[in-house]
Image (cartoon, rainbow, N blue to C red; front, side, top):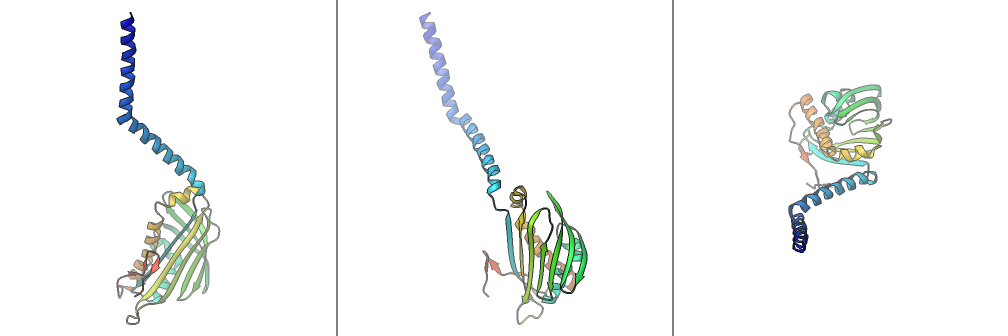
Length: 218
């Protein structure tokens, strides 16, 4: 009886020790990974409220079209739905030589939003669009500036593009991290491509004049 108890107790000890050793290997790693993942998810979720909802993008390009040509494309808000990525509808409500007001609808997963934009026009130097009543944004500003290009190439200009906005929702703000830069770059490129469709081949290929956020000196 005593030997039986000793054997039984020893077996339980060995079994317990074996489980400990096993848990120090593969099983513990699985448990650790699961807890680590959960903790990461919790940290990500709780950080939503602390993340900045502001987004900004700036670009500067030398392009093979004149200031007037690029201005004409960018100021043609009525036709944005035909060539601007994710613009589903663009309706100009009022228009004067220096200002226009338009309703726009943008749509790309998971966002489908309409807003009204007030656009300031200074031909051929500037197009500035400001969102006035978007449910998705606290504010949104899109700014295009056009300046002289190369002296030796009349059909060229420098295009400065800037977009900045602040989401109302922390969820949309964090989600935008997945696609914002890509969307902004595609928007920027779409206007140059549209200039090509309207005015033919560019006199020179587009050249990025920003590197790590700084202007490249030529």
